[in-house]
Image 1 (cartoon, rainbow over the protein chains, first blue to last red):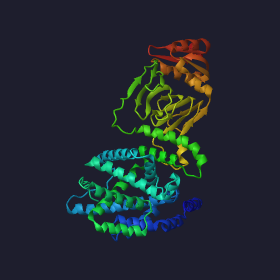
Image 2: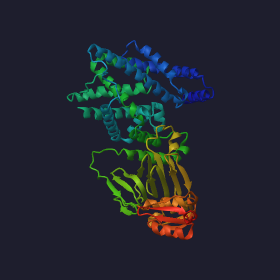
Image 3: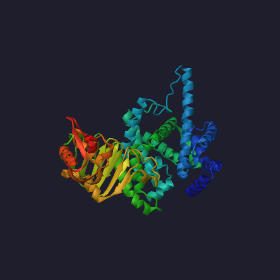
Image 4: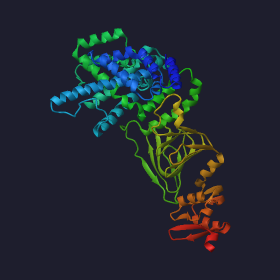
Length: 190
Length: 349
């Protein structure tokens, strides 16, 4: 699969302007997963269909698309999902702002605002520290599996292959890491 | 998304289970592993209990909230580590060469953000030498640091790393081997990392020079590891072996050369005598000025390129200038706070 995408990209590099075929391919490969992703993120709200479209529209508008998608199958998925996640967050923010308007609390989106103010920055550093600590406290296998999944955007299969373990083992490691991070970040809040 | 992230400590067993389940869904969702059947199972689960929705939302929020961290140093270090530990099968041979770099790079990254802060670590110590001064410092790990003139360093040792921040000046390090605690010299934007070796780092203004006498060091740019694509890793790093010199002038791309003789020359200051071989006067003067409060200035472009060869004592500019006058057509005008060098023909007019 990964080979197909990179072939495609190489091909595109040679023939600029034909990015549409790349988009078609991305849509073909990832639409079902994206649809599922948005459906769950929106708790089945019918708006998810619009967001699927919006995600592809945004993707198509990206500059240098071929390069961005040249890293292979899983990072394409992760890229697509991050666009979708942003759209979901925008939507939540809009809803929140609309509500705030009613409450005469305009201009103050409530959540999903990262890195906007100095306070956020401090909170970010704090969060990073906690995540790092949580990961440092894990055994290397769990940490690696999680890092490869979350930050390297590798699929379970890729990770399993690299680590010479089963796919279900990969999942166990990732869940273990997530739990550790949750515990670390939540206890510090309370 | 709800902001109330209160955990009921009472039935933590059950809520833990719910949270774990939510985490499993989230991990599968984002990894693209989730099947259609699982999706409907998930929706059923969400319908079953309000709390499930909240757990899922929180797990999603947690996952999303980590996106920005991807290129942060501590995370990059972990990514490099994970990648180097679990390499792609196909390109093993290529990787074994790269692994050395990766390990060192990740070590460097870790040092920049030393983990923890909870353990009582020794406080960093600052060492400084005056113009013309020098100092030999025995470091707690058995390493030795020679400091040259007008230098300032902060020695920051923790249980996990050995870090020396070079504010300015020049140091020579004879590093005691400790594979678990790499030694790194941080000079502005650049990090020089070694496990056990002899090398010097010189930082004057925006320029940096690294000379390796023994072993291998890695020079990396802080935070430049963003594209951790398997091939991109090495792009911004220089791996220097014995006899290698890297020079970074004005933040430009590093230039690496290999010459054991030149390394010896560059590190000659440790013995008080520096050999020069056919070097322009302006360079030699520049070296002397590092050791002298009273600076020498060349006011005549016709002599800047005079070739100088010899073993010179950099701590004695007066001696150098008088011998310069004796053997070259140079006249030195002595002011209380500076020396002005002009061509002899000019002065005789």
